[in-house]
Image 1 (cartoon, each protein chain N blue to C red):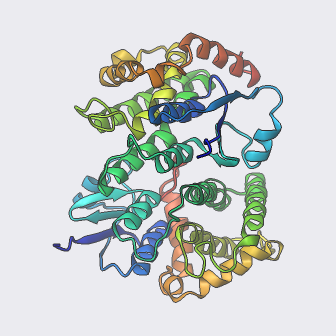
Image 2: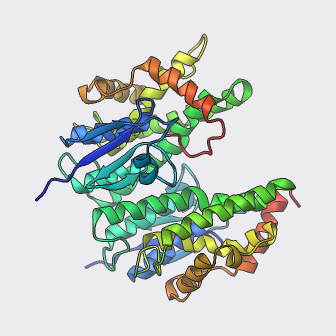
Image 3: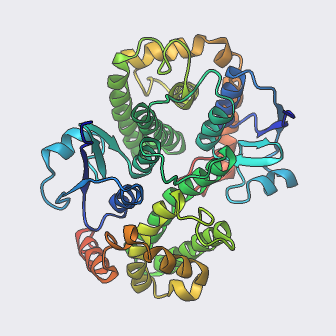
Length: 229
Length: 220
């Protein structure tokens, strides 16, 4: 069968692009990475994602797929090795539920913390802390990763929190905003994730992420509450 | 072979619960719909099955609870594969999931903004909502359904929200039929299906319900 070209439109400042890279590398898929300039978007980019004009976009055999969670499921269907999602419908539903929850309460929550200050920020910190408690409780039963011995869909989706909580640490002045000691299962998982060469070697440098995040946040003040990818 | 026990925790006006009911009906799955009184006290089963969000719908299949309407519809598709609600090819499925996600992110919240706003904000919300309809028109194209020739995943996720369109029209002072005739035609087509029509709430009753919600948030 003719091998179809895999291209990933990304940006070094986008954490969501990393999810796709982790998935592609985990499955051993060769791909061409194209760095997009988000201030000056290429024609290919605009044609591939006219609805949101955001990265990541996966282009497979010339056909674009957008939205990181949609891309992850597509990748898992086309290249079933090192499966990301469970095959059992119920287990799949549980994984999807927690991925949604993580996106909604944790990811969005952390972004809100980064984007606000004073009372708003304090409120955001409370919400993220509550979400971390819930996720920590869910994680008590896992041995190493959600995917078992190797990472799966939920590890990849939640993996971004590892990135962002570090950025929050950089941003916060004196005391740490999130005392990770209060989330022992989450912390243990986080250390295991950070230790994986797949993840470790495919993280944007923290200071780039922080600086660029701040630039992105000021350049795009009216982000609707969909994630900035 | 023992029979499947399928319970759906429901609320008559919830478009999200309707998604699950339509999907189950399309698959010919027998289920028991239990009405929750969301403005009153929530049942023990609801609180136990959905401790995080305490919302409907919840699908309880042989004692196991599945939450979040889009995830429930996906679960129904995975568990009872025929007739299929998603296209056979991976790219078609990715496209469907993309539009499902768009509907989830934009349609209900976009409409809600109209009746939750006051003064000039209403006009802004209305314009944004019409934009959303235009994007969906683009996705529909010349097809009968979002799924193509057959009623499918995206249609199921979107059609219940249209029961709230009358309320949006009243508060926003516009008509979907004028702004988006294609969407209007698609709604009529979907309502011809028994699976949709049987659970679809009366738009005038939804409008009354929205009036109640507006009182609760202090707009009336």
